[in-house]
Amino acid sequence: MRFWDTSALIPLLVAEPGTARAERWLREDPAIVVWALTRVELLSALARRRREEPRASRRLLASRREVLGAWPQWSEITAVEIVRRHAERIVETHAITAADALQIGAALVAAEDDPAALDFVTFDRHQAAAAEREGFRVLGSH
Image 1: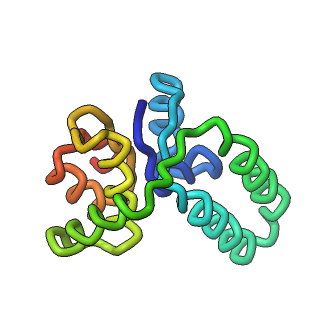
Image 2: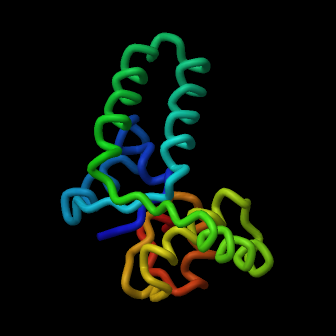
């Protein structure tokens, strides 16, 4: 089981430089754990691309349907108060955004406060560095 950040899920939906790696990781371990608000981030990213790339609208709408269809199969971390507490500490400790801190906080909840027990998948370098300092083995940042 791996915790997936939005930045690592997008390449599963849209062809990007990290797509082959993300697909390989998913084949190796198809159990996906996500933060409750990741779905909003994914839908936002796809909507932004539809606005920026009108010619790709049909493909991006299919990707949107794919997210909504896959979501019930993913393990969703919904413990908002515990995640928030972790994230509040994380933003004081690491130079990352609140959204990234919430993702790491959710991963800590998923790992039951043992980050070595769960891989963290992200293509965001700053978030990856913070997750590594929190004790996670990070896939995707290098």
